[in-house]
Image 1 (spheres, rainbow, N blue to C red):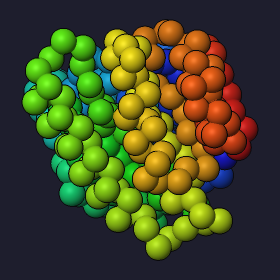
Image 2 (tube, one colour):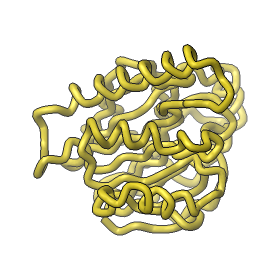
Image 3 (cartoon, rainbow, N blue to C red):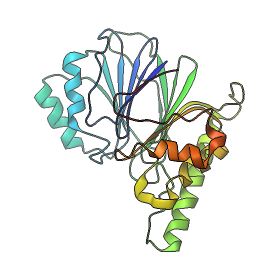
Image 4 (cartoon, rainbow, N blue to C red):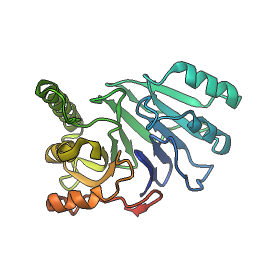
Length: 250
């Protein structure tokens, strides 16, 4: 498995039989094998997680399959497909959903997708493929914003913990050497100030992860090293990101 950080919250995962592209809206993509299915996930409508540019990828890669949060405007999708002149396979999903997306020209999908809640708009994704469990959080985080009422922060925290517990229950009992997830992509937003690591640490305390990658860093890539200085106990699983395009061979 190869993981490439594209930009912001966008990651590309290359598996033996397919590609997974999460929350792409800008950044340089590598050349891909057009014979492999390319599953494109968009967790919600915010500009830094979704762009209609993803539909242009179908011109170059005929085996594109789109898994889009239902909050993404239908009009944007319809207009993009009209301009494209063809209709690739598209799934609209909401929290609690589950699907085995069909590949164009393939009898059997190479992945399964479970859809979970977010503490912002949209969804988060658990992808099962080739014996691996890969979780992209979208905007699922403990958003402890500075200068908001304590009651609002407490409500957000409770929402986040409930969501993480739901994920834990979904993967519990399917451990691999004690790990419940193989890969986790989780927001570490510096705008949160001192609370920047609150959500990631709460997640890791509840769900053992083999490999964790930060996202939503707004180009402040030093945040990864800062995390390891504060939480050296996660040295074995956490991968700091230093620049767009960085590749990790797992």
